[in-house]
Image (cartoon, rainbow, N blue to C red; front, side, top):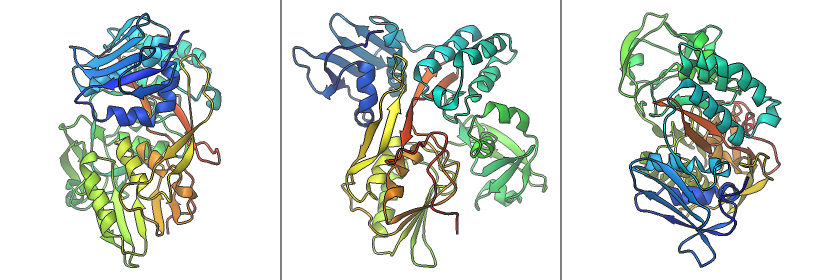
Length: 444
C-alpha cells in the first residue's frame, strides 16, 4: 500500500481553522508517517507536495491526486474539516480517490466501517491479545440482525475495554453536574455539588438513582477494570444537551434537570486551603476557562504550594491542557514517548513527546495534583512528565489511562465511531493506555 506522498509536503491552512496548525504540530510524528514524508508550513518548492486544509465546499472530503502530489481536506465548517482529516489513513487503500465524509445507509455498511477503521487505527490488539477478525465475525451478524443496531454496535466496540474507542453521538452530549459510580446493580451518587437542583431537592452522596438501566449501560460502556464503574456512572448522567430529565433517588429526592455541555455551578473552583496553599479544581478543559485558569495560577504565586484537583476531569481541549502543563514544567524537555498504529498495519517505533515551558511565569513550588480513574483524555496529556519532577506529587487513584488523540468515523446518521490511535508512555517507558498515571499515595 503506497503512502499518499513520496516527498516533503508543504501544508497550507486556510482561514477559520485556528486549531489546525497547533494540532498538526503536536502530532507531527503520526502525520508524517501517514503522509509518507516530512512536512512544513508554507509555500512548496518545485519538488514538494502540497496539502491544503480549508473551509470550503458543501461536504467534508479528502481529495488526493498522486500525479501532482496534491491533497485537499475541506468541508463547510471546522468539524467537517476535522472529519475529512480523519479519513487520511484510508488513503493508503484508496490512492487517488476522493473520500467523502458521509453517513452509512445500512447497519451492514456501518459494521463494515467499524471493522475496517478499527483494524487500521486501533493500537492495542497485540497488547490486549484480541483477535479482531474473530470478534468481527461474531458481532457483524448481530449488528445486521438487531432491532437496535446502534446498541449492538456499542456492545461490540465496548468489548475492546477502551473508554475512548466507542460508538457515540455525533453531537456532543450534555451531562448533569454530579458524579456517580456503578456499585453492583445500582448507580450511586458520589458527588452532589451545592447550588445544584439535586442538592436543593435533597439528593446527597450515597443515594442511588432510580430508574436507570444499569445492565444495559454496563455492557455498552467500555472501560478498564479500575475505571469501568465510574465510566458507567458517567454514562448514566449523559443525554442530549438541552433535553430535560426527571431524576429520583432512593432517599426520596425528586427533581427535573436539563443536560448541559458545562453543567457545573462553578467549573473552575479557586480558593485557599487552611494550610495556606492554593486550591484549583478544574472540571473540564474548556477554552472559555483558560484565561481565568492562568490568572488563578498567577494570583497564587506568593503562596507556599498549590493543589490542582483534576478528579473527574474527563478531558476537553487538548491544546489548553498542554499549554497549562507548560506552567508547571521545570524546563522544556521530553515528557514521555508515543507510538501509533501505522496505516500499513504495524505499530511505529517509540517517538519522543517533547514539551515547552510556558511564556507565562512557571510554577516551581510544591504542586499536588489530585487524580482518579475519571481523570482522562486531555488530562492524561497534562500529566505527562509532571510526576517525574521533585516538586510534584500525584495523589488519589491511578488515572483512567487514555490519551486525547482520537480518530472519528461516521456511522449511521447521528452516530460516529471514535478510535484511540496511539499508546503513550512515561519517560521510563511505562505505558499509560489502559493503566493510567500512577500515584505517589492516596488522598490525605
